[in-house]
Length: 321
Image (cartoon, rainbow, N blue to C red; front, side):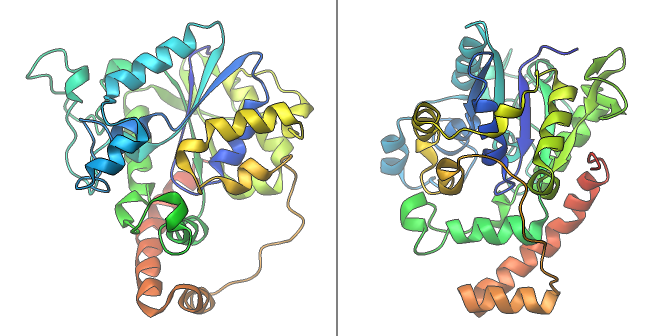
């Protein structure tokens, strides 16, 4: 069984923070790191994102304007030195340049000036990627992308600080590229989750969770995930209705203000009681048009359609419940 730090790689609005809350109840054995690579991706001297490229004041205000990818790794290594297993939840797109641009190893992580790793889609060296027990969480773009769009337009943009919707932050294609590279390098797989318990001779299992399964069958999904990663499962992981947990979570999620309100205010993870309503492309378009206007609807539709194949590809590897 693997005892490596767990890395839950995902894309925005995949219910990943609600899932993370489950493991934040296990502070006796786990140390959770909430989206640490966003610090270097958006704000630091090695930043890859264009979002704050021309807003130095905003970068400085975060306190992460000097944070490199090496700094993030050092922080995670420190977390792991405290006797607890580290659980990292983060966006795959924080690890690579946007818009499909080729990646080079982050300057702070290079062994030499000409350090190049052919085929590696990330700015982290292969040796670093090998240090983690990788898992994946996905959600259908028709739900994930409109939810993310809402965070980037009025009135919520005043809270999040994300003043523009950037399709390059949808995160599906980057998650696919990371997933394929990790499988190619035999860091995960070939054994699929459910076929073996976590770490066998043939490697860490391919563990992909779909957010809809999480929302419909939370106990079964959490149990299965724990089985694959070697986390002891207890039913009380699904409940956190106490002041200490709420305070801890509010502090941990503070840097991404406005994105995690539902997760912060939740008290447990229980199966949803309302079934999916039947939707068509036309009804979706109309809903988005009424909420955000004609041009926004076209942007959302284009982004959803572009990312459905990436989602469906990853979905083909997902655990079934």
